[in-house]
Image 1 (cartoon, rainbow, N blue to C red):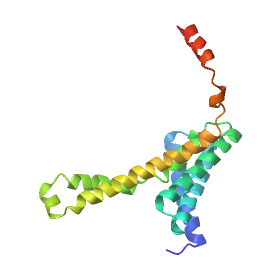
Image 2: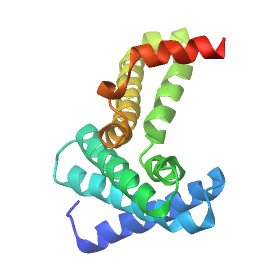
Image 3: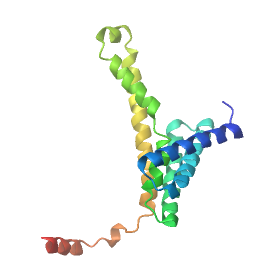
Image 4: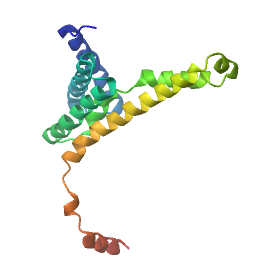
Length: 172
């Protein structure tokens, strides 16, 4: 498929609508639905463009989720809202549903031993789709967490173990 402005805009539009839909489903505030849609559209658009440039599905998904995570943290500070309110609906646009479905269907086929004996490639297909699904889900989680880790307020140096111990004694 040739990369054209129309295909990029179409991908952005579909992901924008999906992210807004998931934002509504998650109960995100109405004022933040546009943010969720824009993040979902732009993150998926980055993924789409990188896939078309042959960077690979997992690498492209990581780039899109890192974008969503970083911009989500910065935006959360500007709109005074927790980032999960719009980063989660935005990332759902990249959930590997088709690969999870194919994994499940291959797993169901594995229950029929006669079918597996005739076509042993079912096990290979299931393993492939399961690995791909898990890799993409981990990639999404890692991409979102990178933003949270880079912009967190406290650092490990700020942790004082003596203070933590005295707080625990006061609670008891």
